[in-house]
Image (spheres, rainbow, N blue to C red):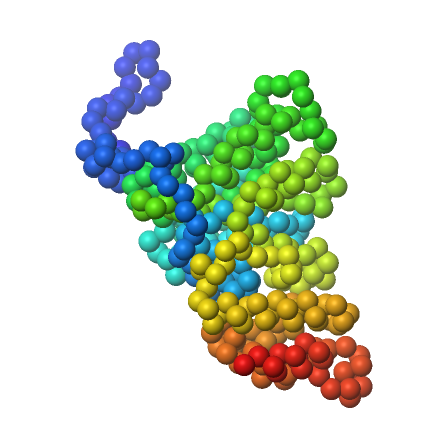
Length: 352
């Protein structure tokens, strides 16, 4: 930022006369910053709370089952029409409400124009976008601009969150934009086209020197395209947090369509306290038991319990009693006939 002058003859743009600020910092201070590549990457250790309203179950579930820390590298794995864009907006709202010191940046790549307008109006942060009718070079340029700005902020000691929708469309754009290498993977993917998206996603990290870059990227699956499946296969081992959305729940119009068993965070013990961690582990075990016995979807039972509590702390504290109360109404036909609460409810009564 600084003073500019009108363009001279033969010039197309305004010229910068004097630099007054660089990323809202005095120019002299920016000379002492360390380069992003020289910062030491460490595991995320400070959780970003997303919980806001008691009836917003999606972010409450993420806080418990797939917590997001400062410096997280996460994927939202979603089939089409499962609510991934809505979930990204809810995550942005949760961050803005609970961590106002974090700089939120949203990158919409190849998105529908009406979605761009909706996100721009609803998210408290910087929104960068390219619509699907724009050239692929614009998609790549938007992503690179977002990443470079985020890196400069992290170098200045700030915490930044990038919400990317989606890394699948970004990879498709690079597949068309980069010069052909003469090699082709299944689905028509050029191996060289995978490097720029991996560089983008791999930039997410918590740093020892201060500052962090968190990237939560949507990844499309079950689209019928072998190329999209290949993109997911390439990225699924690179993140340290995943939230999976379930097509069957979405088709029944049940939201949030979160697959509890497949969603999670690596090294979650660094983000959750011991008591919460133990309750979450028990919750996972009993969700698996609930599913193995062929009863109704566990997420529906948990959703019903969570809506009766004001916070996650109250939910975990009163989980045994609440599970017992809702089981007969949410259980199988055998329960409705008077056979008593489901295994889900009975086993939750054993939580200390």
